[in-house]
Image 1 (spheres, one colour):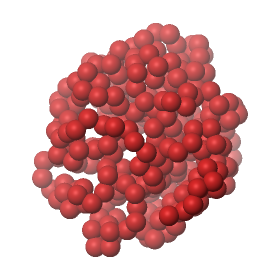
Image 2 (cartoon, rainbow, N blue to C red):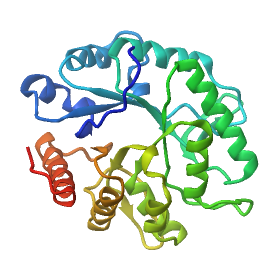
Image 3 (cartoon, rainbow, N blue to C red):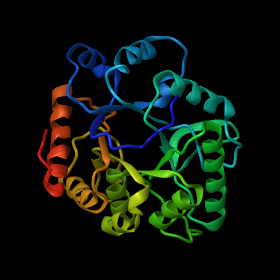
Length: 280
């Protein structure tokens, strides 16, 4: 693949199997698509067939859930080789994964598990990201996850930890606006403290999504429409960070493509109003 340039892409959607035919047949005016990396690592088959039909027409980015950057296990080089092979095939604009761990001793929980925000964890994660970037030959994006527990051992706030990780490893940040809102509610911090302390020059992508609101906590489910407080937080993020490539994640209770496209237009309108731009 050619080296990423991390240029602004506009407004995109998560490419899900439910949308393959609609995208191929109607070529909707979506600026770019984000793919779930693991969906396309099996050689051959339906997902790669459709991806090959779509990739010539849209910029793509790869978003993974299996890097497990925080685990004590060594890096899974077989997985990284597969990621690199897929990148060579589709030439994504960049590759991202999460600030978390997903398993131990070869066992994958399929959950994005939070880390203690300690100096020891910081050193470990920074070294792991450097190894990944050396293997791939370019910088990756690391995303903040939603969380439901705190660790007593933590020495930093989440936003301090994420900032230090990005600066010390020289990676970029995928800032998930919904995850900030979810974690803020669950851990009773002000989401604006998070937004205001992330370095502007590190943020290359935003995620927006819906969630499930329960009585005393929120679960990041990606199966509802985006709620007003998350839209408001997104507006604040645009005011701080400016033009950042933005996409909507929807992984359950999938609506018709046109409904999700309309939600994307709302994101576009909010950004245009904040930045005083004309909507194309």
